[in-house]
Image 1: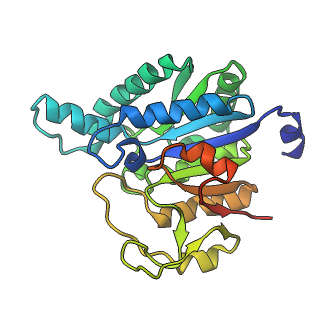
Image 2 (image 1 turned 90 degrees about the vertical axis):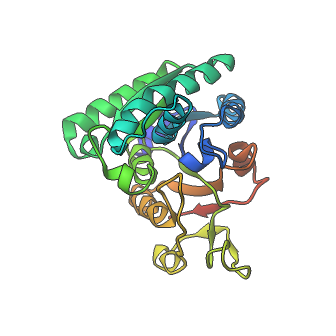
Length: 261
């Protein structure tokens, strides 16, 4: 692993974008938020190889179905099938304005448990990066239900970071990071800037319901466990803020950093 990292001219940054970030607190995908993300990607390309792990397919489908006055589907897998190409189309339209070349990669957990599939996935992602393409990874929700029910791609992004031997996994959330209690319900909750003990961190979890995303702090700590085993630093940042990626990297905005040394 160390030899591979020494050969890399740039750091590898995996950014997981949850539905709450991509919708900017609404019920539809926000082009403005994707433009904000695009500007940051362009500014970081000289120093970082960036991989996106993106939720939002079901949110894209919900909007499309609503504006066309169609009957809402009961199956979230069917919703994902409708929304995935719509989501990618939005990405590609916005990215084109910023001269960002992108490619879609749909994965399931089985791709990380099968050695041949894992090797093929790694080779594909590495080849895309080598040729200047930004991979956009999502779970293939039409054949797998794990992330629809659990985690909103938090764990998937950790597996991708491990697969590609990333330097940092950044989880964009609707909160600044980890607190000693739920800050939405406890005004005395204290912000935690750095975590090294996951056992202690788990005791601080107090989830709240979300109508848009399925991830929460529990799934983020599960992702942290994967990162800990892989020796990858993980950050939780507030994706609702403008310039959240570059500000977190520069230290201009607070975030929780999980460091395992």
